[in-house]
Length: 91
Image 1: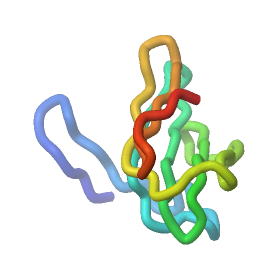
Image 2: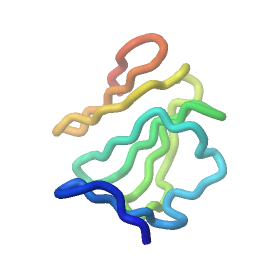
Image 3: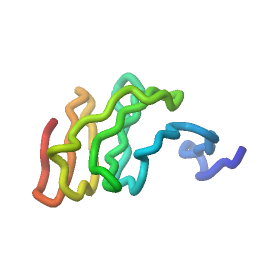
Image 4: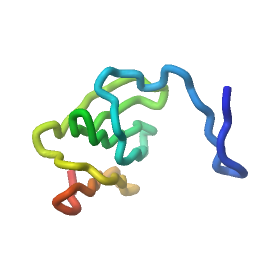
């Protein structure tokens, strides 16, 4: 298994993690306080994809509202903020 990074910031590639057909160009990734992983997918279909820490797909949302996603941030209170072509949005 490949490991990347140094010191306290080391990451391993987990083969097969989050493998779903619609995963494409990703604009941002963030984790909430429950270790769920939010993937801000830009193309082929803009959407927010949510996974459990083990890579199990949970849900997706935002297909009809996102246009050219750029980044995501999740606050300590699990408030989700996304940057898109039209600015900052709170979800």
